[in-house]
Amino acid sequence: MQIQIITFFCVLSIIVGVIDAFAGLKSSLHANEITGNRIALAKFRLNSAPPSFISEPIQSYVNIWTPMMKSIAETGLLPEYVTHWGHGAAMATVIFVVAGLGAAFGWQIRLGNGSGSNFLTLQKSFQEMHPIVMRLAILFFVLGGQGGLVLLACQDKPILESPHAVSALIALSLLFFQSVTPAFFEKGGP
Image 1 (tube, rainbow, N blue to C red):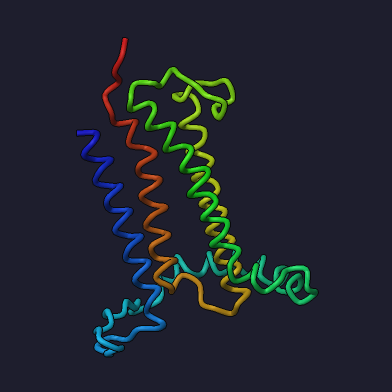
Image 2 (cartoon, helix red, strand yellow):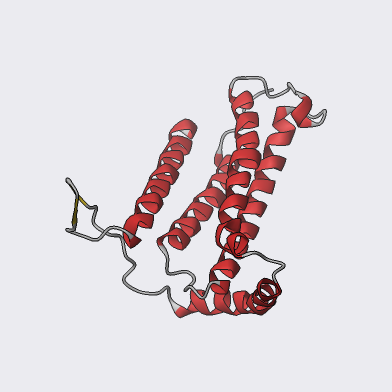
């Protein structure tokens, strides 16, 4: 049962990622538009902004940091490519390095090597390091999401209305849910 739950949420997060990737095509593809020999995918568009009880506090938080970031950008200390690509680069680093390392530690636990270690575990076991590294990944994802919202606002783009913002909130929710599921598992071992 545990494996089915984890597999379900892994597949669901992959589906969310694929939807996010195809939703990013909406700026270049339009519904029923024929481009070359192919018919473009139907565009994914959010029909309305999020409820005000969600968007107003987040917008207020983003408004705290946006003037400072815009003034740094105006002085030339923050190049435009960092404003545009910084969030993506930071999140790719978190996914591939931190979450990848945590997943590798988790995989070692699944293989029965939980008491083992290597140079990446800092002389701790895989079983000790896995929750630490995955908590750090969650922390970096949450901080990165805030940074992404601020950088969107610096570019004068609406926040929380893009498909990426919606899929990121869904993915963070799934990640938090997955982090609490071990509390419901049976304890094994001696």
